[in-house]
Amino acid sequence: MTQELRILAPDSFREKLNRRAFIKAGTATAGMAVVLMACGGSDSDSPDTTAAAAGDGATQATGDWSRVINKSSGTLAMYTWGDYDDPELVGALAESSLGVKMKVDYFGSNEDLITKLSAGGGSSSGFDIVVPTGPYIVQMVEKGLIQKFDKTLIPNMVNVDPAFLGQAWDKDNEYSVCKNWGTTGFFYDTTKISKELNTWQDFLDACMGEASGQCSVIDAAPNYAGPYFWANGIDWNTEDKASLDAAEKFLVEELAQHVKAFDSYPSTKLAEGAYTLAMAWNGDARQAYFRIKDAGGTPENWRWVLGTPDTELFMDTFCIAAGSPNTEAAHAWINWILIPENSIKDLEYHGYHTGMKEMEQLITELAPDLVKGDMIFFKPEEVKTMHTQVLNSSIDRLVDILNKAKAKAGA
Image 1 (cartoon, helix red, strand yellow):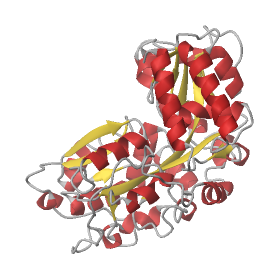
Image 2 (cartoon, rainbow, N blue to C red; image 1 turned 135 degrees about the vertical axis):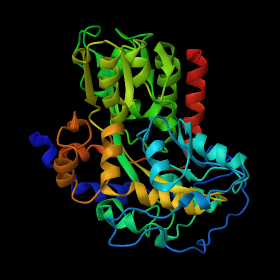
Image 3 (cartoon, rainbow, N blue to C red; image 1 turned 90 degrees about the vertical axis):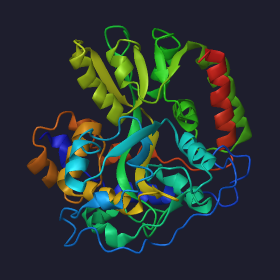
Image 4 (cartoon, rainbow, N blue to C red; image 1 turned 180 degrees about the vertical axis):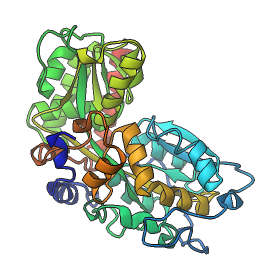
């Protein structure tokens, strides 16, 4: 292990999430993109079942969980971010360990997730497990889109480092538990971009310069706007009208025409040679290295950059959808994925910190040959530059800016 991996859970992480990640009271309106319609109520009571697993939290979930799969649905259905789980953990291993078959569908933004759940009437989406980003949980609870856990069915929650529990959006972890956390930067081909890129201003300049027409950005409203705010020293959660007006002018009238694609998961297209420069979450950028190599390319020609002077901090969470047809099995799978061996296997695949206790020891024992760990584990000084999204009155404006930019780009 390199020295950089010695700092695995910076003390500043908990402080930053609790200080930054909250829903501003009184800012949620019926017109907001994240509150698309009134939803039906959910059954938030704990299911009347016995524990799925016993012990001190380090034990395997046991039992024939195929018996709790609703025959009308046939599968345990997950709705999550793209390419976000080790295929074996949502495939053969889930079936052999828990007796469940899983069906996984993907969304590109939290707004897309909430739209889909809301369209299902709040309690009839057909999904069992969903994976929202932390700050969205408050609204999802208010709108009846997710249900309370029966914590007796998730004893392995004790394996999660307390630094990643008890966040402001769900202080008692009644509805959610950390899946993983990460950040945002960019990835570029050093053989096609002559200048060394280090900052978000460098990213924007290159997208409008050497990488014009070969640049991709994340397809989510706050993320598309983020580089402009970060490059200009503006809080990306600003509600200031003048700042939002200036952001729209730049993002729609100046940047959009240079953007080739709005792509939340660019690693596959990067391997295909579709982009020279891509804004990316750290885990997907890490996967790009492997995919470029598998496609016969030269990963050494590519460089990952953690955007500066500021960038994003996110935590995604496992939740159970309201009206889940397979609630017990959903609990069982979440409990099973929180077994350290499974969590680290997942981490090796998707490239995000999964929040386990004693992470350094787990990596040493379970993943001693971990590749590009510096793209997963960040130093305290790096974490200090990361800021969590706040849902406030600006979200509608940011969604409008994204839609206008897509129209300008012809995307």
